[in-house]
Length: 333
Image 1: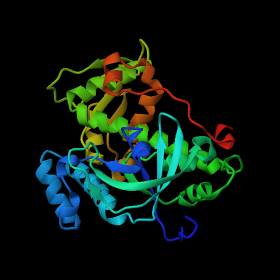
Image 2: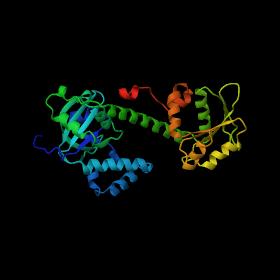
Image 3: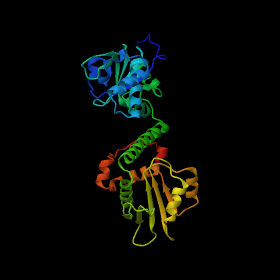
Image 4: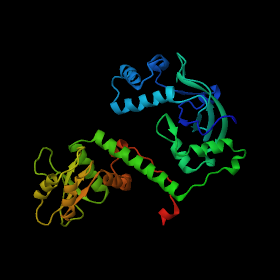
């Protein structure tokens, strides 16, 4: 290990479903066993893509691209002498090792795409900064560690783990919290886009408004009045006219004008979209204070704020768990 030029060695991260497989057999491994021995393919991404499409014809383009890239990296870009970081959930430890072999395939085995590893150090997660833990917590099965590679290598070569606890800066803590929050918002909007279209989205927004303390009435389906929901804060006016769009395209000025055309004197308008607004539409909203526009990001914020009051069916559709996340003292203040 001492003769290895660590500046030339890459640091990789990997996750495992079988927590004991890696440590017991001194390997790292990934799945997609149906693809067979990947060393038999022409070593180009196009060849990997063709094989993947052959075995998984129903896979979406985005999924295919992510998986093909991951497989190609594991087979071709990893070198003997590179380092591997494996965060194990059962023991909450970070295992750091050195990759000893080229890629090989073990037919008939689960997680048949493999490389041999020498495990060098097993450290508690508390040794590492929150930023390093966040990077190794990637949603990908196999990935390159770049930002905090030096921290993992420093921990590997330290002789006293009690002396290598990496400090968390306010910037790192804030970034970690922001990344968790953004990931949650992305999940919410993807689920809404996938599962609620048209009238179903109108019903959801009506329920969200009820969770916020409004009385709502959803317009009969099939109407062309430009009014999807009517909302009141209490028994008295003003009336709030709501229009909901579940389309992916950004909302134009003319679309918002159609909402204004459906409003009576004294009404307020609310436009809700999963996407966003064009520049002209934003300008129109700025100059029309009686109409409020809510885009996808703002909608996700409201859902998080009033999630506990949503109908149980919607909570099951967007399953979320309340957790505590670290924040910096400056952010708290």
